[in-house]
Image 1 (cartoon, rainbow, N blue to C red):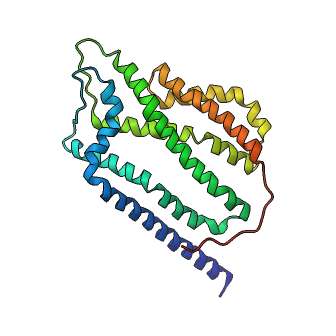
Image 2: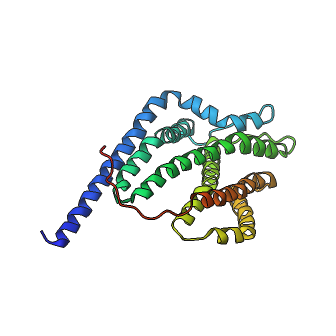
Image 3: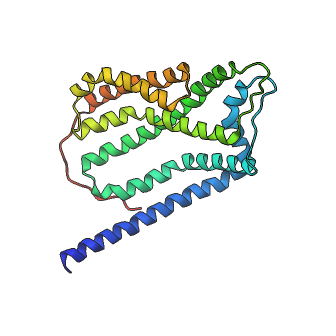
Length: 252
């Protein structure tokens, strides 16, 4: 067989493997979703709890779309199903990329993936338990007298998802810093010298991804700066290892 044919065969086999891993991931999410669908209303009520608690007496949430009362809880349940199935999805990703990694890279990737998942969930929890009650309480206090506060559930979901994503990614800063140092893109000294620019950038990012109030901007900017410092500290401990031989992926 010619070299070109061998390369094409390898490429096709990778595509088949990728399709198989993707299908397994989707099936896993669907199974978890079907197990949760009966509790879709309760799941949305739990998600809406910070807003409902901050609304003034008599305030409530509304559904302006014809099918909103059905579709929004389904969307929330699907999101929760993906979160619960994330370990299975990440395993499929790991099983696909593992054959191309060196031994030292494999030893590093597993803890980094685990830490990134924990940090992302921590960011979401921080948004739910700290940011939402603070921001909703602050905003609703400024509602003019005679104005009934009634938030549309679809818009609330969009806001919640955006905030979860923003704070989840914010809490990934230590992982990003460690990876940048490990692969040699930047040095620790450069990261330390960039602190003044990071401070400005943190508040710019907070202004873009949070509501237009000072409280929520500080609630994102301050953790971002602290996590940047944590990333520098951890990158200094881990250092850069020498390359080792590649290992074969574990059998599925």
